Amino acid sequence: MGQLFSLFRRTRPELPSKDLEGVAQYIASGQCKNIVIMETLRKSNVELPRPQDIFTLSYFKKNPKPFYRVMSELYGGAYRPTLTHSFIRLLEERRLLDTCWTQNVDDLERLAGVSPRRLVQAHGSLDSQHCTTCNAKLDDRAMKQAVVSGEVPLCAKRGCKGFVKPDVVMFGETLPLKFWLNIPFMRRADLLIIVGTSLAVPPFAFLADWVPANCPRVVINMEPVWAVGAREGDVECIGDCDETVRRLAQLMGGDWEERLDALWQGTEDKVFRYKDHVTS
Image (cartoon, rainbow, N blue to C red; front, side):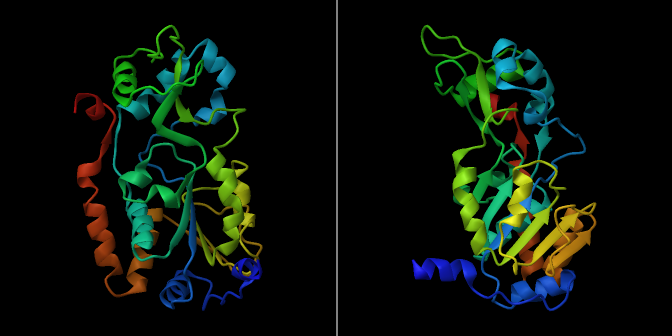
């Protein structure tokens, strides 16, 4: 038990400077071993409504058609992991990534190569689905065939025919169990990077307060984040996420940028096209 508490309470070094250069030096120092990422990376210029904002489960059970109309743009689109997704994968490859927390439901983190065991999808995923009546799982192919043809997916279990819902969190639903089970492990973070999110949605937003008080928190975003800035070790890097992580890789030196580019180039054949998964 004493070893467990020492893990959470160990002394963490300060950043050499409160800027991107200081962050790079800290990561390269070898003293940073448990980086936690909080992200909501955008995969296109389209701002898709979050299902938890506009749909309740009770409404979905009565009439699922509006849900699928709204989500059809995501289902029918073509999306590739961003350079920042590949940077997260690079952190894992270098054994620096503790956990990646995401509010996205598109599974682009997995397409970029981030291991499921390192990933906490706070709002669920479009990668699986279940019947809202009997809770039975629906085959991916049957689900996607229904969606791209404009039909409401129905349960395939004999005698059921309930509506099938992707495993995304709707308003009023509790977050996945994995979310709650992993919160205590935020205490082992020695660097928190908040990227592409303004932390406007609780309880996801509150995760930033779970890291130790002496853990540096770095914001990489187009605008400041209200929840970060009051602590001594907080750093704001305002700007484009992909450009900023590339600059961070450059500052890391060695083969960081070269490897980052290689990982991202490797995602060219992993573009997510929902329709492809039906016909392939």
